[in-house]
Image (cartoon, rainbow, N blue to C red):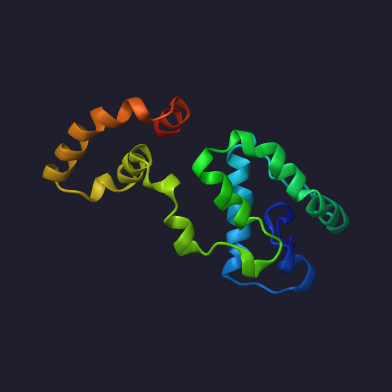
Length: 147
């Protein structure tokens, strides 16, 4: 019960019990990939440390096979997040600033998360501008939004 889910664990945690914010970034990379991989992590260790080691050896190959399904502006940052060397991973601030998150449809979806806290004027302005952003939001994101 105390064992972490190896499917989303950074290698430095598993092999040397070292943890840092960069370990979280590796996990974020695996989580991001699972979004575009039908919910499956690129590492499927099934709580087995030996399976984890084998899957980690195949991580780069599995990532390259998945990259076609990952949006273009997210591909390079995800590759950086999944670098086995923690010092070569993108940090949280830099990841948040990538071009993928500057997309108007992403901004619209992010705003919907906090719209409850906005006043009536802000809500009205947002809903009027949403008409222009809706055609650019992929149906998958719209379906997720409806949930």
